[in-house]
Image (cartoon, rainbow, N blue to C red; front, side):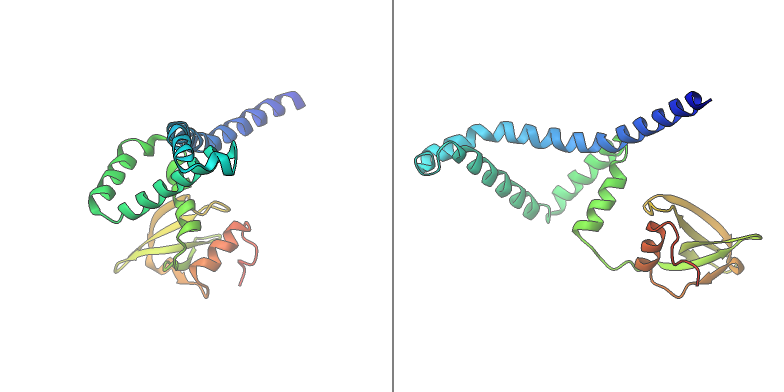
Length: 190
């Protein structure tokens, strides 16, 4: 009996690990390719500047690292131009969206690197036997669009159109609601 429970659990855990690691492997592969391509240039720079005599064999690694940082800085500066943003958007829409979990990781990275005030309005939606927390997206005369984030991964969820009378505003802000959901609902009861 235990054997039959073990295999589905093992399969589920392995698949979850694969879905998690695919974007990580993509990033690592891209950085490795950049590193490999730049290491010859970094070695040449170390030779030209005489860093090998000062630092030794680590000079090529140091100059390659500095070169990589400079490239990231320049690209970060260039993305302020709309043409490059259009290219990035095209790349995301045509290629990267098909990488499992990419959009979720992108949202999480942006959230960590570029934190901004979450202006969404937390609400309760009352169903016949329970109520569910969510974010009010849009409201009309008799209906409302509500996003119901999953716990603990609030970047995933469901969107529903509900009767406006089912919706009541929460006495908290979006950031606090997200933290409660990440804690699997702890402190959610008012």
